Length: 80
Image 1 (cartoon, rainbow, N blue to C red):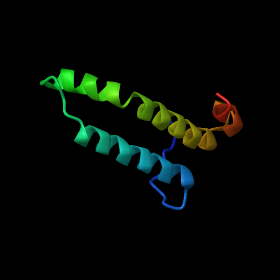
Image 2 (tube, helix red, strand yellow):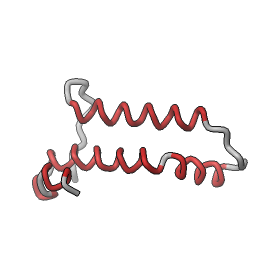
Image 3 (cartoon, one colour):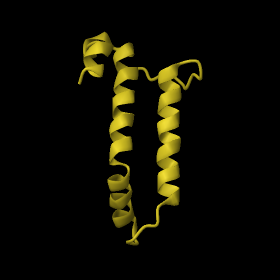
């Protein structure tokens, strides 16, 4: 099991993830959804957030690689 630390405002990666999350929430809040229904709206949200979600996954990977050396090095994730 991998330990996930609590949010620490002193850690730049944590602040980056929080900022990406805030941006994603703002994008969805301002978006006028065309279709109604949970699945349709979820799919539309995923589409408009696709770039943000890639950035979030990358930032999460950087946080996790610091916690688990078996995942590789921070440099190997940055170069991907």
